[in-house]
Length: 201
Image 1: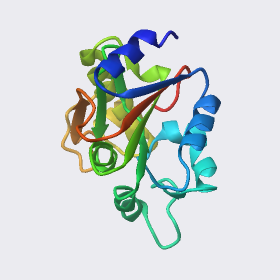
Image 2: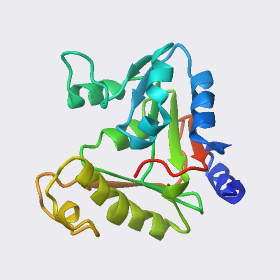
Image 3: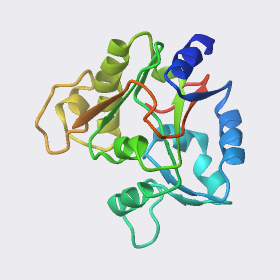
């Protein structure tokens, strides 16, 4: 995939952008760029696919809800991730026009992506890219969210039928908040990592 137009749209919105052909190349880049830091993860299958946790944990203090330490659970680890120097996450949809979309049920991913860190990395596979903001938002709600509900074993209508969002009131609803990143947050260092491989949901 030619990322040149998407990268230009993101840079116009003040993000730094790095493009890679493979997840392995992106992981090596992040491993070299992040050293001696406290690092938080945003519960991302994209990051799991990169295998970046093991790489960074060799020379950083890494906290990841998918790898809770002894005596901790998902929620206590997720809170710790909000206080790290660096935060890594993905998005559910990226418009070719440069807007990004995330849907969250618990809030730890979107909270960590918006404020408080020295650096935030958004790691995005080619499957997340949509032509417009409307299409990216549709993807987040009707493709990524139902698949994530299935992954967590929830019995929401979208997980049972696996076709779209039903705007339900289920206690395990996974789309309680939607964030549109119109532009880089003020006073934040943010970089988008584009990878020419399908990664995550």
